[in-house]
Length: 174
Image 1 (cartoon, rainbow, N blue to C red):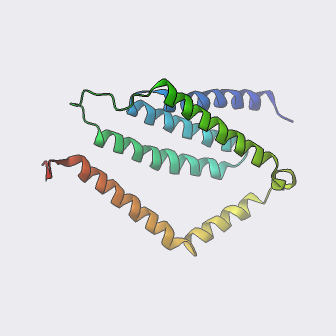
Image 2 (image 1 turned 120 degrees about the vertical axis):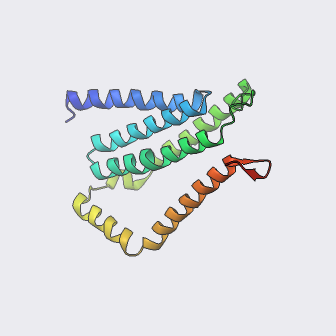
Image 3 (image 1 turned 180 degrees about the vertical axis):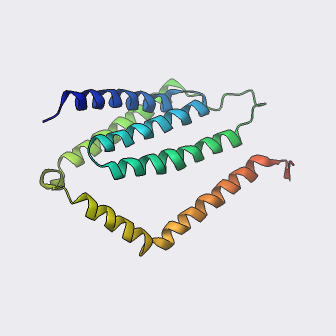
């Protein structure tokens, strides 16, 4: 049975997340888009926590808000050219309409695929402590090398972004 407090929390979180997601898509300033995307990631983490998957909720907050959104903000702030007078984020009506149509089509296909999935109807909740322990053991044993490689790749990408932002006509500004 869903309590009134849980329903109110879900409704408020849904409105905030949906508004942040629409803001991330519709805003013209890339910095505001990045901040709205970080708020949308927080909302998704809140949904996980409301559903009782606290581990996934906090991982969502740590990985997506703490790493991905911050990386996106760094890239936006490092690659912006304040002296360029043109709007690089201008869209026409037809391209916005086409993008909306593609997004609705993808949503419809995913909704049909998820609703017809046999695992949705027969899923039984696993023991959360056992699955969290299994994830931890898997990350530090069999998936340690890919985990470290991802860290190195993100570091190299950040250094490349900084160097690319600093270049002016083939020379580094110091």
